Length: 155
Image (cartoon, rainbow, N blue to C red; front, side, top):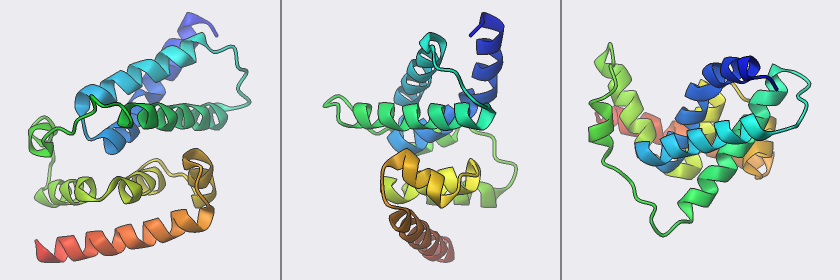
């Protein structure tokens, strides 16, 4: 892969990698580290990608695996989500409420929800990325929507 191709792909997928990493780790420093590590792996890879979607799937799989490694680390810590929210610019209050509701979900619900609704992956693709059965993905999405509905009604 040439330097120009790498820069193009890095710019195209960096935000998606960061979003998944942050939704997994809930820590901006760890999410930045994961993003950097994944992009370094992309730069070093000799793998030939069939298409952009093949590359994106590979990047998401590498991101999830790297997040799992960080999550097992004894130095892993969660940051206060309120501090991170201040760095984001939400145009509407409802978007902020939805973001906070999603980030308050347990990781097993939050990550599939982000992959499905924000990144546009199917339940089959999420199943492959997270190494869990497809029915489990569907169940987690269903439960996550119920938890979000309940949380947002309380607000």
